[in-house]
View (tube, protein in one colour):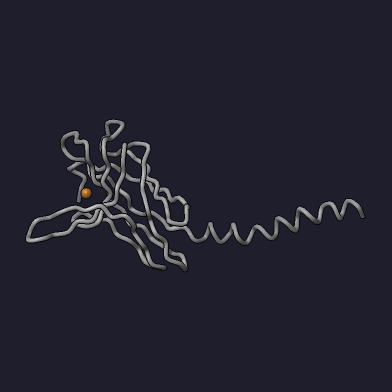
Length: 150
Ligand SMILES: [Cu+2]
């Protein structure tokens, strides 16, 4: 009897926690098709592209990005004003429920500053995205040399 009572408490606590943890795991955005454009020469600034899909029922907001392989990672938007292409930093990237944010050449992209190692075509780098709710999403990015870029 005493043993049964002792066991039932931890089980009750566990059961009450599981549904919350399960929800958080289900509702993570997913980084797909990530790649880094490797210029012909070594430059202190590279661009990276990917799609971030949000299969969740709620909007997610990407507030920052970082990578161990670069001193700094920022989200940029490209706009064309009077025929001149300009880049500006994007403070927040909201992704509505069931939609996908697309970072592609000529549009939104990640600016990778000061690589910490020499990158070659075929290398992989990881970029971490921080969400407004504090969660972190990791994405794998393939380095593509000039010849491999579509
Ligand atoms: Cu840029």
